Image (cartoon, rainbow, N blue to C red; front, side):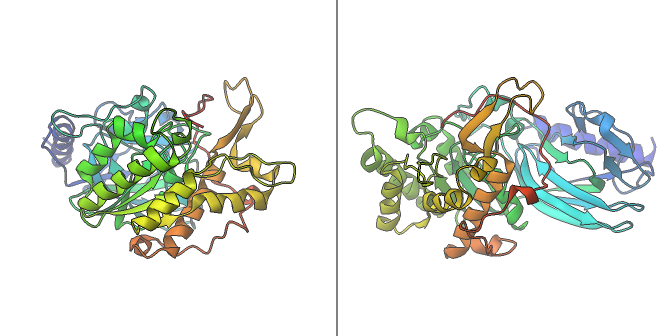
Length: 432
């Protein structure tokens, strides 16, 4: 057998054992893209379709144009690798010998990792980021109770999927298992979760681009979740099974807690009690909790001011933060300033509001005042980054840079060029 074939066989064997063996693990996978094969990596010299181990996914192989030393995405391309759950450091070399390129990479359920990085002709750049690959298992007897829609999401399948936007030139891909890395866990609702399909988006899947590769973001938020249902579906138990001393957890709930009815339910009762329980249990693990008040809904009065739809829930969270000495990011106040700075009409650009037939198969207008599009989600992420920088939890050390973003001077969608993902659905996420 040829040496290259032996190496290829061994890597495939490692992947297979890792995927199907509970205790199996991988150390490093290395792929080289281009028609000139490599002696140091698995050569991806043609647009191999993903089946069991690695390849181009979601019928995008026809958008792959192989050059001598790189792969060019002529439209959005998905590349998947079967690997077990865990944390990984991903290094990607980008660039073309003959042309300038603009490179954008998303991971799993559209987590923004590399955003419009430019290379000149002949220039090669290397980008490294940390990725959380998850599954629903908590222990030998418990699993997260996923919703049916979640079971189809890239976050919960048994592979790592990288999305390369049109124009991205990929030369090499190195995936290394990380045994120990600082982790930022996210617990929240639809405004936080990794929305799997366009045009829906959340700040949780855009904040990833603002952290360095010394921390990994593990987003366990879920559309429609309240503090009670997040616990009931064992998502909090999953977080607690993984969280370790020195890790961080951001907790943002409110939108769906407001709709719960019954004795003992309310901002100063069940909501406050559960917030305290979350904080206490995270601290018992040695982790650092950060509370985040809920984002505002877009609902203006005739005077151009936002109506309050959250009642006492933000105030209740502020009190818990004060009583327990927990870091707080007041996203309710920040998004109030943000939306009012845009005004009623311009703020529509940050939400999923599109006329009928904007997207394939979309026969009705989308008019959502809670859920963000990519532009809006990134603006909220910038607010959260600003809040991280203004606290002294230590999390700010992992930001690529401290943000100078201010909600009273928001960005304009006219300057927004980030490419939208092509996988789409018109059905809005759970919750409001």
